[in-house]
Amino acid sequence: MAVAIGLEVIARNPARTRPWGRCGLLVNQASVDRAITPSQLVLKKALRGRLAVLFSPQHGLFADKQDNMVESGHGRDVLSGLPYFSLYSEVREPKNEMLEGLDTVIVDIQDVGTRVYTFVYTMVGIMRRCAALGKKVVVLDRPNPIGGTRVEGNVLADDSRSFVGEYPLPMRHGMTIGELALWINGQESRPVELEVVRMTGWKRTMHWHDTGRPWIMTSPNMPTPETAEVYPGMVLLEGTNLSEGRGTTMPFLTMGAPYLQDVETWLKTLRVLCNLSGLAIRPALFEPTFHKYAGQTCRGLQWIVLQPSRISAYQLGLGVLLATMHVAPEEFRFKDPPYEYETIRPPIQLLLGSSALARRLEEIARGKLTGNTLADLESEWMGEVRAFQRQRRECLLYS
Image (cartoon, rainbow, N blue to C red; front, top):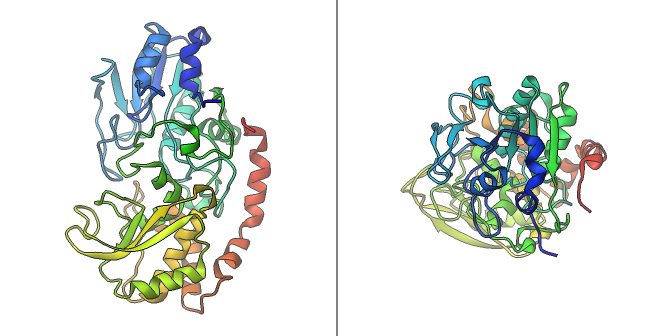
């Protein structure tokens, strides 16, 4: 059975939208149907004049803004003619006046299955504001591109909440954006009236290529579904002086730094630490055109995704950090703030979701690294992960 996303379910049955009244829509350029028709055009037709305004997340309506804390402005959509408000501007949740006259806000945005991806928290801001104003939220569900079975990483600690992590989620949560909305709504003291339009044909074991759907980059550095597969681990590099490949055509699939002189030893250390199943790895030289080390030659690695379901992305990210600390202790460092509007706590704390884990990694890196190193570390948070998995069961919509 072909996978039909929530948007397509509504397009086939527009009468379902009648109770929604006058609507707003959270959307960006990756919000399309199977024929690559933008969501705002599909819904403008289905709603018959009741779609009044659009909202855009980080990177802008057309994902043209490159980096974090690069804000986008408000404007008028050239495709639909509708006005839009950026929710990555002077505000990160809608002001009351932006929601004036609306009965419902529809969320049709493609998530990538990782705790730190900010689109989820833009949705959260809409849910909170709509709850306060007595308005409804409808989420048109979309696939989790990295599947719905595997859960990875430590659960976010309270002292590390930020715009890249507001709830006690593991780094890889294994839920669709609709399931996430249900789970988050259950965490709120004032839940919003919420409806999730389920997909048809999607199963939890599916990764993006299993859906048969075309991929449109969700943000400037998420150009392929293979990028999403390694992102839960490689995003950690944003908090370090390792290049995560921004400024190349292979962000998050390419990584390294000018100071890595002995890539062979680095890779050997990584192989001892990590389960590298599902990946092929090649040593790489690259020169970013912007961002970290722009115009400088970096020595590093490229990940080639072969079997997505076997990749342990978060373990890979921790392994890269440990291996680099171990082989380049004088050169490697964590970055200083700011990061995603946080000016005090270090970026790596926000990304790891823990104030203690970065220090723990530094302690481990100073000792002998073995094949059990990361397994022993991961065992420290498995109790919290199992508790999360039990808690999320009632929010799972698909077999």
